Image 1 (cartoon, rainbow, N blue to C red):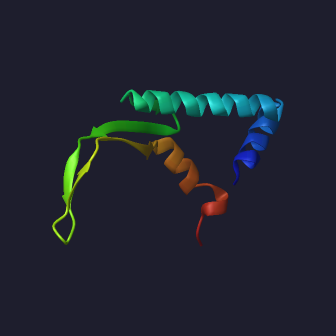
Image 2: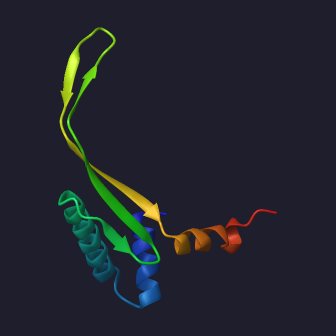
Amino acid sequence: MTTKDLINRIANKLQREPEDVKKLLDATVMCIGRASGELNDVCVPGFGNFETRLQPESVEQDDDGTRTLVPPQVITRFKYSALLTRRVRFHPTTRRS
């Protein structure tokens, strides 16, 4: 599913204009990104959690002995909620015979 498909499905379900849904989706992604950049976790009930941590700087060594300093990085991981997992697992189109 493309972003455009997702926006159109949400717009149809909510009976809203796709442009309004796109603005809402863009704002949601921006807020999650900003919160992650500030090292805050974001919990969306029924969907999942965006867990953020700071990976400290480290030194990596190549096979030839060259050492490289790797700067600290913000790592964000998405963890599905149990509800979303059940909805996907037991959806009629995903059942296996």
